[in-house]
Structures are given as structure tokens and as C-alpha cells.
Figure 1 (cartoon, each protein chain N blue to C red):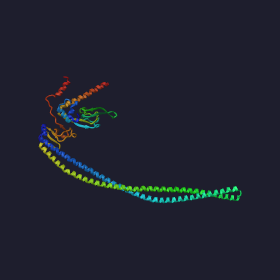
Figure 2: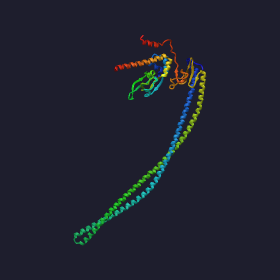
Figure 3: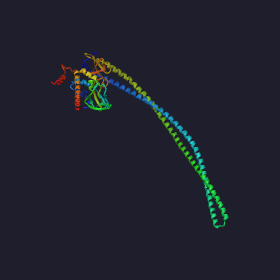
Figure 4: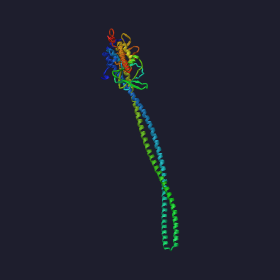
Length: 153
Length: 338
């Protein structure tokens, strides 16, 4: 089914970030996510930008790029629907650790920090659950990193 | 204005009365937008036509200037042609003189050759006479006279031969001069040929450019006339726009009164029952780009009275349950391994 035929709510329901949310919570989140379209090659954000949003991919593919010491960009990962990115900025409000650029024409859903605040005000438990889900994702990544580090050592 | 509950607004938005009002609002605003677009289109056309007329006139001016330059070039070519033609007559006359001179020299050379030939003939006869006298051995005195005559004739032949060489050299010089003069005549004719054709071609270019410039002036005048017509048509739509604005204003006023709300232009607002600082609102238009969330017409949103549309929120559906959220209970139960 293409993105045009799926609602924002259906797309979000596929993401592990929103596991366990109640239907009204998911509906409000769907209203708080803004849909944005990008062409292939268009940059969603640059490494070093101040992060204030997270994104869920609705359609298409995106490249994640990092600069090496010589200043050249290298693709370190390619993301596609229903993957997400930028979620760390909702927790630590730090600068973006990588750039993200459309590999194909892409549609993404964007949740800004201020719109997440609306969700938190209205659905405290739902917000807690979103934070738990983000923590789970980060925990999985950390475990994976530790495992790789252990292999190297 | 009475404060409202969310369910009251939901009921209102679903009511046929609101539906009819909204339908009319959409028709009026669409009509207004259509006329506004048509007016902008006419003004854009007028603006482009105006620029086109200006540019056309500028091109026509430039063509007229170029036509003048072509006429100057044609006149110069004509003057050059006349001068070259006059010079060519002089060159031709000089050639004719030289040709006659070379011809005279040729005839002189011919005469000298003929006389040398006669003298050689006479010398041959004398030699034969001397030879015959020697055989008879009796004419010493006669033979001596012949020998003396032969010597004179041979001296004369020698002298004439030198003259012939001089005349031949002169003839060669005269002939070369004649050929040079002919080359000059031909070069003059060639330049005159080109100058004459240049005169006529520049005259043709000038005529053509003037014709094109005149046509462009006419077109520019027509375009200016069309600009005036388009501006008149656009101004006629001004009054239509004013009518639409008045009708929309009246319609909004009626909406305020019928639905007991505040309407600025594109959103309906009510104070929220039991929350003094909160306002419920219903957009009459969709927006995907200029608010913090993407709003849909006729959906219900809420906002802070002080912030207004600077920060708009979806209306939350209640999920309150008595006691602790069972999801969290389950999560912590898993975490404690129970």
C-alpha cells in the first residue's frame, strides 16, 4: 500500500516508538506530526544543526551522512519506511550528530519538540510510554555498540 | 459569547445549518479567489504586454537607426563607384595610348628586321659574286670592289642589329607597361562593380529595415491599446472584488451571530467551557505549512487565549482511567520479573 493510501496514524502505528499507545493517544500524535516531502538529494538537516524534531519515514529512502576529518561526507546508513531518526534530539537537545539527505523522493512525518510538549500535557502516560520506547531503542543500540566493542577488544 | 464544550462544537459543525453556512462561505471565498486570480492574471498580461510594447518600440528605433546607417553606407558606395568609374576612364585612356605606342614600336622593329634581311640578302649576293670572280681569276679589280662593298654592308648589318636589340628592349618595356595599365583598368572595373552592387544592396537593406521598423511601431501601438483594454478589464473586476468582500463580511457577521462565536476571517473561536484560558477553534481552511501543526478545515482545535494561532493544539480525547495506567503496571511487573 503506498503512503498516499495510508493515514499518518497507520504509519505511526507501525513504528516501535509508538508501541503500546492507546488509540486516542496515537490519533493525537498523528495530528501533531507534520507531513513533509523532499526530493532526492534534498537535505532534511545538516550535521551540527540544532535538533528540535524527530522524524518517521513514511515513504522513500534517506541517507545518513557523517563528515570525516577531511570534511568529506560518507554515507553511514540508509533508512527506509517505517524507520525513524532524530529521536535523540528530543531527549538531549544536542546538535545533530549526522546529516540526513533524501536518497529517493521521500515523505516523512516530523514531530517537533513543542508539539511533543502538547502530547505530554494531554497524555502524560502516553508520553511516558513514548519516552520508554525511545529509551528501549537507545538501549538496544547501546547494547549493540557494546557487543561490537567487545568483539574488537 | 457563551463558553462551549467540545461536544457542543462537534454537534454544531455536524449540523445542517452550519453545513449550509460553510458551503456558502466556501462558494463566496472561492468566487473571490477566482475573481482575484483573474484580475491578477489580467494585470500580469497588461504588464507583460506593456513591457513587450516598450521593447518592440525600442527595437523599431534601433532598426530605424540601422536603416540610416545602411543609407549612409549606400551613399558612400555610390560615391566610391562614381570616383572609381571616372578613374577607370583615365586608366583606359592611358592604356590605349600605351597600346598604340607598343604597336608603333613593334612596327619599327619589323621594319628594322626587314632591312637587316635585305642587307643580308645583298651580302649573300656579294659573297657569291666574289666567289665567282675568284674562279675566273681575271677580275681582281672587280673582286676588290665587291669585297669592299661587302664589308660596308656587314658593318651596316651589325649596326642595325644593335638598333634592333634596343628597339626590342623598348618594345618589351612598352608591352609590359601596356599590360600593367590593363590590369589597373580591370582592377578599377572590379572595384566599381562591387561598389555599385554595395550601393544597391545597402539601399535594399535600408528599405527592408524601415519596413520592419514601421511594422514594429504599428504592433507596439496595438499592444499599448491592448494594455489599456486589459487594464480596463482588470479595473472592472475591482468592483466585483469589493462586492465579494462585502458579501463575505456580511456572511461572517451572520456566522458570528448564528453560531455565537468570534470569526476574524478563516477561523471560528469560542471560549472553552471550564477552562478560562483556553479557546476552541474551527478552521474554515486547510493549512499544511504555516501553523505548528497541519490543520484541516472543520476539525476542532484548541489554543491558548494569549498565544492564539501562534500555537494551536489538537483537542485531546479523555483516556483517564481510575488508578494506575495498566500499561505501566505491566511494564514494571516485567521489570521486576514478576
